[in-house]
Length: 323
Image: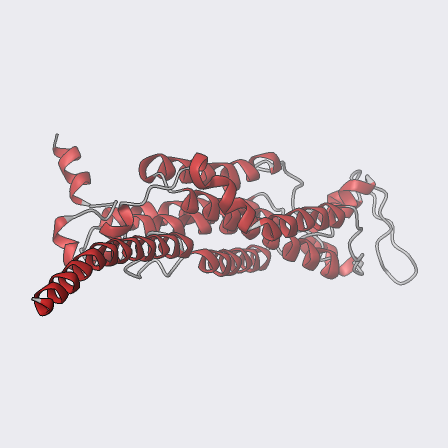
């Protein structure tokens, strides 16, 4: 009971009576229920071009995986800094889409079940997908262009420990081609950029939904907002601990992911600290149009009621004049 009263006092959903003077428009909007069945097709058709662009971005990202990176010169004297152990990933590659894409979508669906707003569900998913895809394309493009060797490049190039160099002192690798190719994709960190993209977007989404910056002093809201960012930080640290990336790779990946997440989020949502930061722009536009339509119906009804009355008054006035 104590915990229940505590969390209810956080007023995550914005229906508090204390905030009624500032939330008049929100109360009006709450009257409009937009479900997947009633408005889903219309919302998706409005953004059909966005979904087409999204498919194109997927094709570009797949194409980037087929391109070989720039094989930067690696000399004998550089191998001292590239001789770290070739360890397995603490965070497997297959797990990144699960926590960076699937987990946020599950959170979006939970909020949809609470508020029943298809605009919020559609725009949150669309913004998330754009975030991770744009981040992936930027990250992989830079990887291919720079070709920076990983800290464990030595054991990728010389798995048996037998070093071979050309006349210029450059390495002649005899390791597995796939591992050597991946060994030139250190900068920036893909794990980190995707983590900060997906989880950073989720953090922004939660900060708006729970009104973390409404100046009511609920630190529990900030803990909820910072949790995804902490998880992303731990992923980045694991990349350095596993000797798959230099610290600069992780730092750059984090900046890319956070920047793209903030940019894409703001295309669909107001700032989290804004009074209307809990909902997407399209939600408020739809509610405004709905309110204008209702006001128009009321005015038309009033005009129809006034016209018969005025006619009766005119007829009564005419008859009195004749008398």
